[in-house]
Length: 267
Image (cartoon, rainbow, N blue to C red; front, side, top):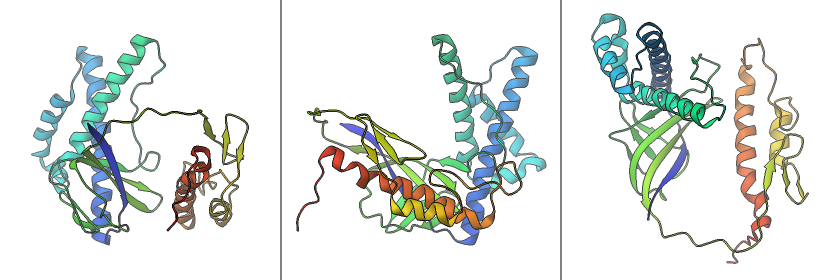
């Protein structure tokens, strides 16, 4: 059976590559805001609904003008995928409105208030501890890529705190899943407590998570306070924010192993 699997690696870009990643994220954010503005004006003036294909054709004409020539500095996939995401957001809104679900309209994105991310397609390769991205080049990874395999469909680059990550969507062949036999339990991640099970069992806060929160001056489960409001964070806290999120994510697996009867194999 063909399934889609994600391989996520933390990148170790150079100064030039980090600037290129930031430029791609900015181009994707600008394309989203530009496409949203054009769609709103077209619907308000002519009651016309513009699709992602129509917006992309209009964007190609704008790229030939001197004012928007800077778009040639980034891969064409970054703004193109942002317009597709915008189209998908409108489709989700219309479907939710018809079915009675509460789904909001797409909103404008602002630098510093939304996550820096973009998606690329095309000539993407994975080599030994290296991810090759279009227009960016060979970017080293902080983790080995020996377990990677499958046909690459796309890659999503995102920035968390001061670190860049690349999540590759891959099409791989997997055997048919076996039905799960046994009792079922639910786990809810909390704030004051790391996790609580549906039967009342409490999972304590991991030590690494508490250490990371203490280093940033925040209680476990709370982000550090902003320095100037508007979501800005002091520079010294960016690293700690990344450690808090990484510690919480990495601690989920060992904390939930007893719930599924996992035992470490003996050597």
